[in-house]
Length: 616
Ligand SMILES: Cc1cc2nc3c(=O)[nH]c(=O)nc-3n(C[C@H](O)[C@H](O)[C@H](O)COP(=O)(O)OP(=O)(O)OC[C@H]3O[C@@H](n4cnc5c(N)ncnc54)[C@H](O)[C@@H]3O)c2cc1C
Image 1 (tube, rainbow, N blue to C red):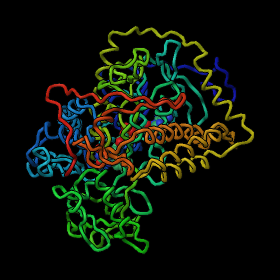
Image 2: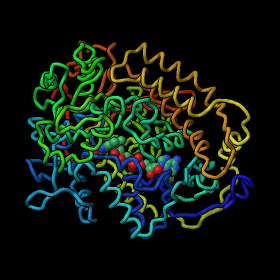
Image 3: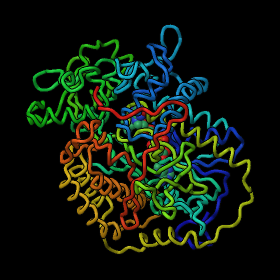
Image 4: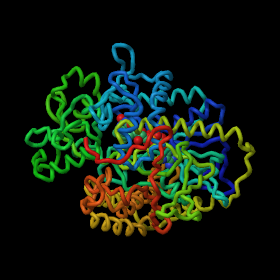
């Protein structure tokens, strides 16, 4: 392969694959496994060793209505997810996910995933926020768990199965851009190897983006440092709009000051949030499920307690989570990592004292719009709008799929329920795999050489950095992005704050164009990678800020104090406005254009769940 030093377009080596998957996390490896099992030649590119992808940090569990420990079925799971999404999720996709859930969990069990077990040998399930039995009556045990290391067990299981099936891993290879031809089809990716600075083309009729979240656009985050939204940036640069980016989930229990996550499984096992008076305040905000209310509601309640002067600590700036009553045995059996995190990041022995927590950014509900088969789909702008002014028709982008946290199917709508992300990775990783295998059998398998022009754009990005003599440091600009997002796209938003945030983010555009790479070396140059990452962070931040400023209601995680309940809308608690806003947002980078499209209201086999007041 050619190295950057002698790089001309004709020197860049091309590797051909039946499918190229960017991302070796839970979603990427679930899809690659399906393809490798079907005999396809599959490349998985990943920034880090696959089992270090952020999925490894998932603690709490995978949602599936196995009903091992309480009365449950997929209809209840479907209802909870629709309600949790504040009716912004597409009900066909949610139905598909909840129906498939038990199957994907049993598949994992048969692959050898070491789930915790009940006495009778069935998979252990714990309660989780927003998951209920009998349509909201009481909390249900639905989260299939391997202690508080579920993601770790999942990722190792999938990695081993992939090795068995011959998936080829390209580790520490960083994808830079999608390769788009004149017809708008995607033909693979161009990528750089961190170790050597080598650039190569991975040509393929199928490209799957599985690059995970982008929580690093915020200053305080539970996300890994690698979660910089690279797949999102790649899609945006290929002209693809992003869906529902205003919706970012704050997890109620990040360790105060450190940001490290303490799983919702803590509250699943019985932990209680308390204010400075020791009051279990969630009883006031969610009388039925209390501490097991969904994350948007719990985060807002915590913020409210702090705002009203009932925060803990000398600065009254956090809440505490109390697990002292659970007993040492339960904590060491069910929450051993949480015990370690308490010791190492908060200097607290959770068996003896409560631990300081604060809502911390955790999950991106929006992303690259897809069908339930993972195909990337964009509205057909030429086909025009219907009588409501909405774009109803979509075009599938040939050769491109997106799965996992970087995709928006959309099953999480305005607020994701805990455990539904690991489930999303498995269900839609597998669904995309199935669709790709079907397509592959009908495809033309002769690779035609790429027109070298398709590489011009990325090579010019590489050269611009390499030849830079002055400009801005990538990490300084990334810090400015993070500070802006932290202040202007927070748990509670106001229109003025968001408008100011848009102006501040747009003003950073010049700096992004003038990033200076001081270290020009080829071997393991992490500064070069960071310079590419900041361009991706910027696209995610712009999409978030602009989409947020243009949604004039409160829904799920997007809580804007300016928008009161419209008087003519009986279903609008806390400013949700179903008359005007049962719509997805789509943001286009070009011209920062926003359009809206209708929420898909038709489930596959059951009745539509009508919107109602979302109380717990
Ligand atoms: C601390 C924490 C705990 C969580 N706990 C739970 C839980 O208990 N239950 C639940 O349902 N959800 C949980 N979540 C959410 C869930 O874990 C994530 O949404 C999910 O794991 C994301 O998986 P993914 O496959 O989309 O991406 P990831 O697992 O993040 O993997 C992304 C992959 O893409 C690769 N990549 C990225 N950019 C590039 C590039 N440019 N080139 C090449 N490769 C690239 C990375 O190397 C990586 O392999 C948790 C999240 C966090 C942060």
